[in-house]
Image (cartoon, rainbow, N blue to C red; front, top):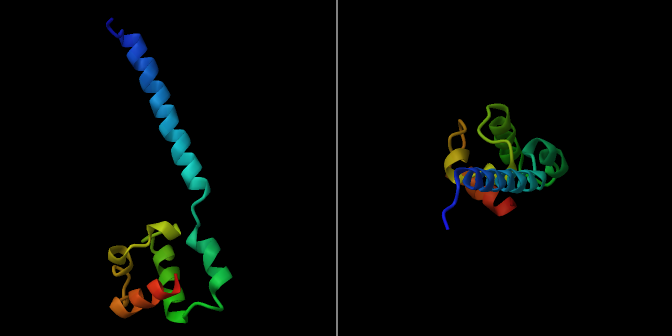
Amino acid sequence: MKITKAEYLSALYVVEKYHRQIKNDVNKHRIKIKDWLPTVKEDMPIRIFNFLELGVYNGTFEYLDEITRKRFLTIKGAGGKAWFQLEQFI
């Protein structure tokens, strides 16, 4: 039995709709750094707080799960020591 073009396009629409649904579900549970920083300001080293705030300001990252070593180190002044402190904190 051959699949018709209409059946293929219908199935493709369902798959794309499912992908959008999954993406929306994942985004609901992501933590924005801008919302998270004020809650940890007292416990976090000020140096790390400033780097994260700068990273949000200059668009390096927006969500907590976007912070990677490579992206963090692109922030001016951030180095290995700051990354180590961040790893210890998180």
